Image (cartoon, rainbow, N blue to C red; front, side, top):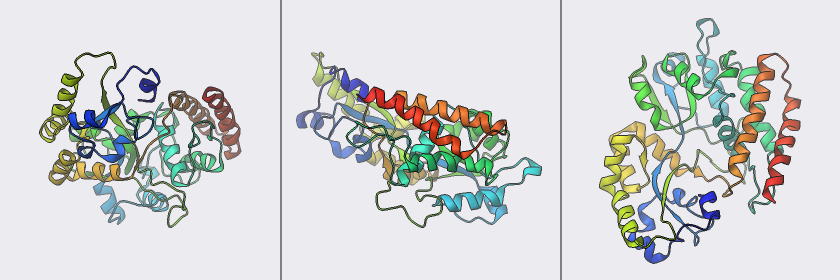
Length: 340
């Protein structure tokens, strides 16, 4: 949406337009935070949402004596250690540092929960090398180097490798995943042994978030509908949006394609019927939007590069946490150049 809005090619929605599409009240308010540059400059209507959560192996939890999913990252590490059995090739958690998308999402979540952000609120200053950012990256790689809760061979893993290990019963908890993995898990050996839960929202070593920390249980993610500014049938476009975002159509769409409704009533109806969906709806309540800037795409690429270098160092026994800050400094400089 930031890139679309920058083109100035889409209709800025008036109060009348919002009434025509069914009203803002029909949607999750978190989704509206990414529908435009400010509350009175919205160009997009939420269609489906893709909140992130974690999935866990209920059998492995039971065998380790874990009764509920972790709500803090300290508990997460402790639970993962209880489930880890290297001789059996079983690990409590997973890590996929060679993936293009997961590392930045995970680091951003950790940083937000500690009170950091990757770009300043006024969108003018890159902040990818703050103490919170450095600590976020370090904590994730600590899973491999300090806590030993992930497969030591996973430095080359991408998200598909992590999902495969979880589906094969080799991983206790898989984080930063969406409901779209359900079909894969339903065909796996753990089809009746998994459950979803929101990810922890309290930083490692803390009992609660610092005052400026955001829960960031998920990024605000999904698909939006916008109307071209040059259209001469905007009334029909708004009628179409109204139809496909009403409760009945949203439920049908979700059952067919697996994406979750952005319509609150539809999502709550599905959540009441299926605890798997309920976990994602719960995560959405604590969703935190990423900064509204077209520079976010290049930022993702830049952090993927940092993750790739560090994972290579871990794999070849050259890793040192002191290497994190210089790599983030470099990435930060690249992004700062694009913010002006």
